[in-house]
Every structure is written in C-alpha cells, then in structure tokens.
Length: 148
Image (tube, rainbow, N blue to C red; front, side, top):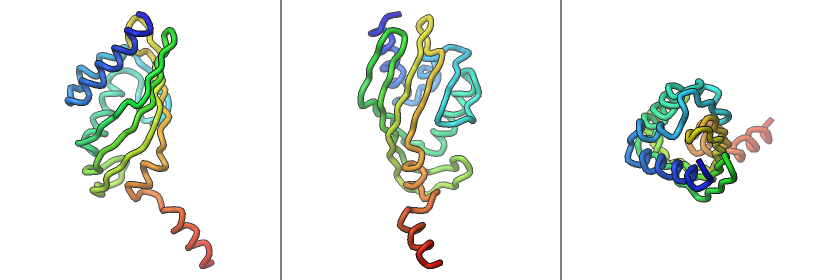
C-alpha cells in the first residue's frame, strides 16, 4: 500500500473507534502486531491491543482520541493526537475520580501488507496521571520539602 492508503487506513480506524466499533478499529492492525511504549502491559497481537483498549474504555467511557496532525512517508505513518476523557472506572489500580483528563501523544505506525505491523506510542503520562490526582502536584511536593 502507498502513503495515502496508509493514511486512509488510520483515518478509517479512528472513525470506527469514535463510534466504539472496537472490532472495526482493530482491523487496522496485523494479527501479530507489536506495540511499543505507553504501556508494557500490552501483549503482542490483536488480543493484547483489545485488552488495552477495553480497559481504557471501561475507565474512560467518553474517551476521545483526536488526531491533530498526520504525516506519512513510505510504510510509516505518524500522527500527533490528544486523548481526552472522564475517569469513571478503575485504571491501572487507580479508582475512578470523576476528573476530566486531556493529554497529548504521538503514534508511529509501520505498515506491512496493508496493516500496522508495529506501533510506537509516546504519551504525556505525567500530565495524564496528574490530572487524575494519581501523582502529587509539584507545588505540594515543594511545600512538603520546605517543611522538613
């Protein structure tokens, strides 16, 4: 597949995800896809990605992944995105907080035979977890260290 076909495949997958068609979204990936980054919990293959996205949707049922930019060259496609959602369920052992979170990230896909065979994710995890209240705010850390 060419550059534009790979871009089109990602845009179709994002539309499927937006309407919560997880099976349609996962058609983007090869059966043996390998995911790098964001979470070492994601096992290789479609079942690993399915588990990851299922847990995200349980924790953030209103989540959105908005593509801000998309660039392609040969068999690689890169997109900058913004994740947003309301923390309404357990995520990584963190009970629901009801807080709305928003954080940026980048996905890089390597296509082979029309499917994403590998994916790399870089995500602002610190901002994401801070907004959920899972890590102390910097001013709290500073004030506690000043007391000592």
